[in-house]
Image 1 (cartoon, rainbow, N blue to C red):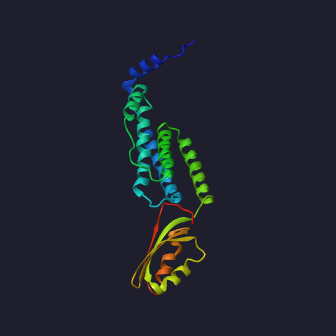
Image 2 (image 1 turned 60 degrees about the horizontal axis):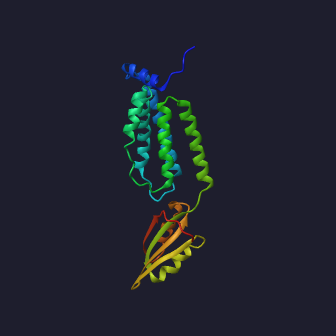
Image 3 (image 1 turned 90 degrees about the vertical axis):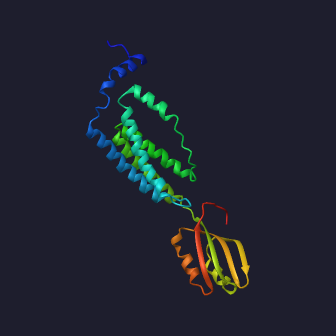
Amino acid sequence: MDKALSFRDVIKNSILNMGEFGKIDILDILTVLIITFIVSLFIYFVYIKTYRGASYNNSYNISLILMSLITSMVILTISSNVVLSLGMVGALSIIRFRTPIKEPFDIVFMFWSIAIGISSGARFHLLTVVGSIFIGLVLLILTRFTYELNNYLLIVHCEKNSQDAVFNKLQGLKYRVKSKNIVGEKVEISIEVKLKNEKDNLSDEISAIAGVSNTILVKTSISSDI
């Protein structure tokens, strides 16, 4: 009966087999990278569909794809040699992610991308695909059923006698006047309003009012009770 290998035996065997390192099949490499890329594209589109922040950052979304690919390469590299994997862990331990995350939801996608790279690099392709589909469906369902109105800041420049018409357009909406500046016959009104999205045509409708010279609609990440 073979005796159980000790940790020392595992390290010794790994050192003896280091000469075999680097003989990864090209088909295996392409399979890992292609599956990782396809699944990370799925993450890319799920992020766009479920994003609810103040300003969408496409560069961050693209970095999720690259993060999955790079992670899969690292796992693919260290999976064939224990000694190299220990050294790689020590090298990666000095890396720190210092860029502040404005949206807590972004952290979920960051860990999801890393998990895709790890599972795909370890050749658990079925887990990579099925797990990502399940997570994506959960995110889409949760964001759909927990959908809330978004906060917008509406800035209107108009004549004094056009104020009533502006507020009439806001009837039925949740809004709050944050500031009002009057200079002669000109008025600047800042209004916090809740909308489903910026495509509600509110800005166009207010701009069409006689006496309104300019309207600005800006999405904000600051939520408050209105």
